[in-house]
Image (cartoon, rainbow, N blue to C red):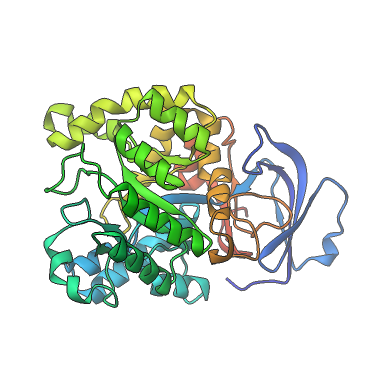
Length: 414
């Protein structure tokens, strides 16, 4: 997978991450790790080290999973650290080979993985890290593990930090920046996977949440928050949270405020998918509650096309079915929100949320999630038209070329 100085992709139809259609007959000029030009003019192939013929293909940005948990299991001690590390590395390679060139971390131990992928030691996606997610006592991130390590949590690699009161919140946020976070994750409401907090709970006071957002702003970036209910959504927006995760119980009033604030919303996981597989009567009570609300949330979000939706799986990368779930989520997301909204969520809208990291952006040289001059050469050549059906991206056989940072990781064009 040697990098060449200059590459050319010719005869490609281009989806740029934002447009509603394709630009046909384009040539994509790549120098080192950046796209420098996309043109319909004649280009001399003699000036390039490598040329790829995209005839009949669609060139598009690499995809982003904007809510993934990496390395959680080695913090929880469910596996030996070395096994969990190797498993995570293998799963990250699989994700890259499925066309996901970027992950936005939603709470994990990922610093070493990011460094290895960025330096080319191992193949894997780019990572926007958040360090540990921050939870209140008796919140969604509370656990026996979190309490065991509370006295040393600030310099002990962990997926969770417990913080109560403004001073502890301020310290917890700053500690994540010490670890290299590009953004901050708060647990701002109840969750399905925790035992001590009903879904309806609103977590962190307005003052605590605002303190976290203020510190994040002082460091040039933003806060994402786990939540489900309208009350939690409104409190988070009032505090300055910019990315709302889950929000399955959203109502019309909350949706209007999300749109007015220009915030991002990541409506995952796709609980109705599990109902189709298991039957709602076989789901845990919390999952059943969220699943039954999902159809209404989908209707509300489809009425508010001005809300910027992200795509996320909320999967632990070390989970046994991560790749299967990822593919199924692509298909189901399209069913919920339509082809173009799903495609933009996978690409161009991710670029917009990454822009919120300003000088904390770990990849400041180029844009991610778009395909244009000045973007990173993180791109796919797809045998099929994702603007007609995003589900084509769920089948890796349709991904004929996968490139990240100008390096080719898959090429079945010949």
